[in-house]
Length: 276
Length: 288
Ligand SMILES: Nc1ncnc2c1ncn2[C@@H]1O[C@H](COP(=O)(O)OP(=O)(O)OP(=O)(O)O)[C@@H](O)[C@H]1O
Ligand SMILES: [Mg+2]
Image (cartoon, rainbow over all chains, first blue to last red; front, side):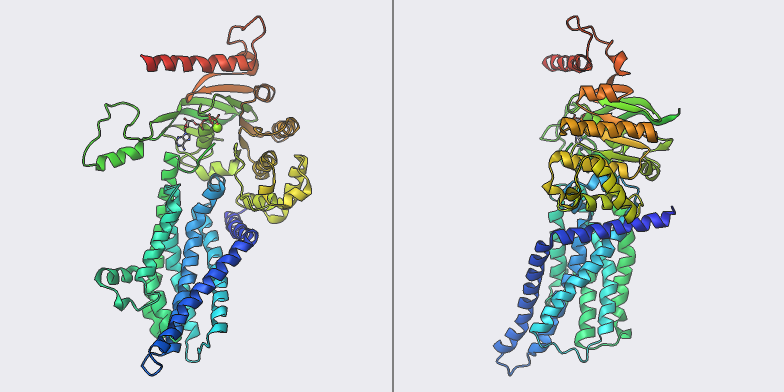
């Protein structure tokens, strides 16, 4: 059997396994879905609240604000879901105790990550689509002048950079068997703070504003808002696309390299297994 | 027959290197007195595998016995590329486990004491995942899973229900099936029958024998069941505190110790004699 066929089948192993896990934990998926919808809606309602508090006569445009928040919560849900599925590549197997079996199989880390990433992107797209649907039902969203194609392009380009960030963070559970998974929450919270999910990054004080430049989410949020709120043309969105593409091109190989080092470190120090 | 596995002067320590790195960064240097164990709550150094050497012939069933913590599982992890040795070399069918891990991984599989599965997934789903990693196609896997698991006495219904609903012994059988699916040339069995009832034990033992006889699979087996070791293994190594203290055929091992009370010594007598002494010796050292 050719190497390519084998690696392709191995890639599918991760996709199928994750799909099975989602299916078997379906009640948990429902809980998470309801949480995500409630979270998105409650933030987006702030837009309408603002308009009312402003007395209706001021320059506050409620519908604009609602869409601003809807985009923020959806993009963030999409990116963070990708992030968590990828960082969990080790965490989930450590939890179940299967990690040694996966790491002793003749599968390259690239194949391993490709499978996990492919699933992560598909899952996140579907999940976010359902949350979007809930928003469309609740809010009277007007997308007439939105550049939908441009917004989608920005989102897909941004996926690559978040895949890189996810791969880097996935080494934490490898290095710190007990606390590694919790550490990934810190990273995502910092990205949430500096990337302008609920506000323009220009409101941030100096050190945070500089950090925003390095967060891929800043560009994805900026780009999708320009596309969907202002209807900016796809050509003009390029300034949001190239930074995240470059980040992806750098972060993914670097992430894989770091992961490889972490794996060797774990194999040297015996951090893969807990017992037996 | 050629060598299937060559283990040469292999050494594996736990607990040291990382601590040293941190120590260098400390502003003050805690006094270690050059002793082996480290203070301020650090884990002491454990010599899990201490300059171990042996060869395994192709098609051989090689047993490793030893007390808890003797280093058996560590040795198996070193061979299965899950741990990197601190010194020494290991080759599996002439491939080096450190330099050519991928080639080695193709040829091996392993069963460990703990069953290690996705608990909410069924045996079928778990085995589909496991076998796809070795490049097998879904259809082949499904039919082989049914074949192997029914052979091991698991009923069809259990194959499609979540693993968490199964007893430990049943899970262990699925673990055996996982290792067989990829058709390894070298099978590493770390206490495969621990926790199995007598009948299930025999079923697994029969499979082990058949693998060797019909497919020429080379097998490394650890067990705490002396009868199992005696009946299955061509040769046995006894490992204590990381070192091999004796290695021979089961019959020859039994001639190594004086007969306890007129009876011919059993493998258990040999085990107790060879691994007991060093314990006493150690206590004496500590007192001194
Ligand atoms: N990952 C690890 N980190 C630190 N120490 C370890 C690790 N794995 C094993 N050890 C230590 O190495 C020694 C040998 O352990 P090992 O698991 O190889 O023994 P064993 O012979 O398999 O024992 P058992 O019969 O109980 O399974 C023990 O002292 C154990 O505590
Ligand atoms: Mg063990």
